[in-house]
Each structure stands twice: as structure tokens, then as C-alpha cells.
Image 1 (cartoon, rainbow, N blue to C red):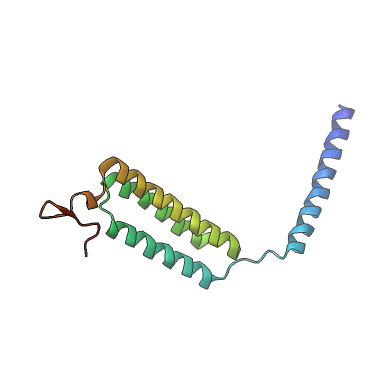
Image 2 (image 1 turned 45 degrees about the horizontal axis):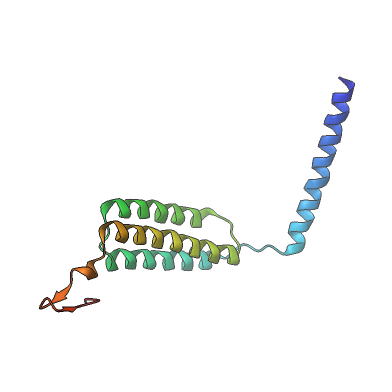
Length: 129
């Protein structure tokens, strides 16, 4: 029992010492949380990107549901998370990657619309406006 108390005391002291070291190192690195304006800019950018993806691609309902979950989770996270500017940019590109992945998977499974656009059965049209 006496040995257990000593081990517990040593463990607590180690935690206290490590906690101080972590606090000091965080202050020394100058971690700065991104401003609300920067977070709003990223949220707006992701909103436009997601809207454009849905308009440009004929997505299945399943893909849209998956993408909606990712999009809404990202919007909620961006409202409350204390991220630095570099973390914010990294998170934005990560979410764009997830959305792109669902579009690619959906097009592999269901095919893209450009396969069906034809002009007089001889000339394939690659895009439509």
C-alpha cells in the first residue's frame, strides 16, 4: 500500500510538471486563433464550392445525402472550433477533398452526364451550357 501511494504521488508530480511544460511550449509557439472573418470566409467558400458541385454534376440521392452530412458537419465545426489560420486552410481543403471523393464515386457508379450528350449521333459534346 505504501508503495502504491509513492507511485501515485510520483505520477501526479510528473503530470503537473508535464502540464507546465506543455503550457509554456504552447505560449512560445505563438498559437493564434483565426478571426471570425477568416472563418466566415472559409464557410462561404465551402458553401459556394458545395453548391457548384451539386449544380455541375447529376448526383444520386445517396451521394447528396453523404455530401450533406459532410457539409453540415463542417459548417457546425467551423462555427465553434478554435483553429489557427493554417489549420483552417487545411480543414477547408480536407472537406473539399471529401466532397470531391463522393462526386467521383457517384460518377463511377452511375456515369457522368457527358456520355449522353450527343449531336446528330456523330459528335460528342463534352459540356453543355
